[in-house]
Each structure stands twice: as structure tokens, then as C-alpha cells.
Length: 386
Image 1 (cartoon, rainbow, N blue to C red):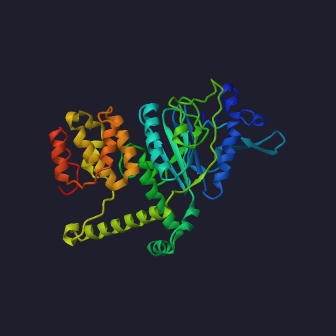
Image 2: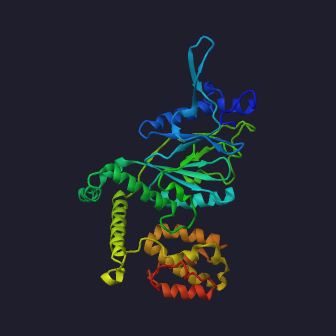
Image 3: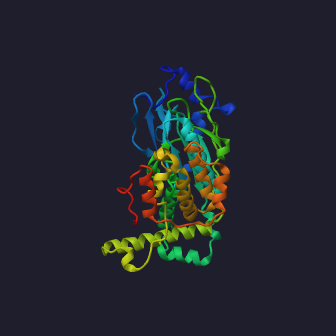
């Protein structure tokens, strides 16, 4: 097993990772310093992977195997950095990671652009990384200081809901905001790794080796991403880059927290109703729209390409649902991406014209009937009232 590069077995790999600290070109040093700086508050866990056989070490506290202590011939202890090859780290408590892992880099590039437009449009400042193979990683570091801008009444609501437990609030909020981002704000317009929602999985550490190259920083906006993989490895001697962490917050934290509080209320109400084995209809209330309905998600899927002449009506249904749930700004991003995915059946002018019209709330029965006409049967998985 080879978790650490060995200069006798593979000098080229060892030399590349060790690098030259005087030229600021040392993966071992830069990666260690980066992890050292983020370890202070988070109790960082790391594990090493052997690229040759996919074996793993146990999760242990930093620095783990990144630092080795040895005895010299005089019995004195000496320590130093190791040339670890593929390091994985735990997710920080204020970190959201969106991993796009489609079969090709091109698809991951497109998916990262879409979610990048959405989260940047909301005011967040992500860091974009190429994983070193085909994936794209998007890191967002939430700035807790933005909560100081909240209206005192909203702050009081949070104290009551979480019983003055900041830790509990932060944990629940981070799971919620990770879910929102990873699901493209409940649209599932693209598929991202949902295992990262709870923040309990490891992620490939910055400057660590993957199949084609080392994980490297691409930029602070989706516009900085390269449409071809930016490969850094010992063969081409291009060194991977680190992005400086930028704390991030939305343009309207008040609105975001209100949405978070509302989601808690809806969830609690649903749980109470389920326990009593009653439907919302028995209570005489309707649940507010939290997410895109399953039948509408069928229009977002690749299966809808076979709809033939159904694109106009499909766009009408999809656009009204997206506008109702997401608002015009985010709906426009998703609808344009959907149009591109469907090979541009609709002209841009048609889409913009529809945005000027009023928003309609369409029944599931209407949507189901349409989907059946175009050959898509979703009754089995649609849980909405028909």
C-alpha cells in the first residue's frame, strides 16, 4: 500500500508533491498549512487513500499521517511533513460543498455553471475546484456574522425554536441550506451528491491527487471555470492552486431565515398531522409550496425529450411552477438550462414573452393528463393530490 509517495519507488511523484518551498511550489507544505489554518475551530478529521488500490486509512484527527516523527541514530526524535498523495478531509461546520459527479467533465461543467448562477445570484461567493478527474467541487463558507443584520423579532423566533441553543440552530440551518443548494433550490434541475448534506462525509482535500491530476482551484465565479479539465500532475509539472477562503452570505439574509423558519413550521405541522393519521384537508388548511411537485419534475428530466410536440405546453407548466416556487430570477436560469438540455425547441423571445404573463397555479390532474398524452406516466411517484 502506498499512502505516502516514496522517492525510491517513484521519485517523479515524490519530487512533485515535495516541490520547492522557496518557490512557493510545494503541495505538501501548502496543503498542510491550509489544513492547519482551518483546523483550529473545527476539529478536522483526515484520511488518506491509496490511488493504486483504493485502500483507505482510518479517519483520524489532523495532522495524522501528514506528519511523521522518526528517531535518528542517536535516539533523538525528528519530525517532518510527509509526501501524502491523496488526502481527504472532513467538511467544516460552516461549509457547503456541492459535488457534481456526472460521467463526463463536460456535464459537470454545465451542472456547476447552472448552480453557480443560482447561488451567485443570491449573493453567495463560492470557490470552484476541479477534482483532478471529471468532477467539479463548489465550496461555500457561510459567514455567521450576517445574522447580526436580522430583525430582532426574527432573532427572538430563532431563540424560541431552538431554545437558545446556537449549536443546534447552526447544525439544522446548515443541513437546510446545504439541501437547498444541492437540490438547486428544490428543483433538482441537476443531480449533486446528497451525501454531503449532513456534512459527515469526507471530501477530497485541496491539492490532493485524483486519477488524472490534483485537485486545483479554478476561480471565485462560474465564469472562471475552464470548459476543458485543468489538469495538474507530475507529468506536465503544472502545480495545483489553492483558493483563499472567503466567508459568504446571501444578499437578503432576512428573507432566507424567514424561509428557513417557515420550513420548520411546515415540517412540524406535517409531523403532527401524520401522527394523528389525518390529512391536511381534514384541518381545512393547505401546505404552502415548499418544492417543485414530482409531476413537474418529470418535465425537467431527460425523459421529456420524447415529448415531441409537447414542448410548448411543457414549458407553460414548468415556467408557472418555477416562477411560483422560485421567483422569476431563479426560474429564468432553470428554464433556459432546460431549453438547452432539450436542444433548444423554444426561442428565447417565446420564453421572455411568457415571463410577462400572469402566473397560473395548475392542478396535478391537468399536469398528469398532459404527461400521459406525451407518453410519460408518473402517477406511481407523484404524491400530490390529483
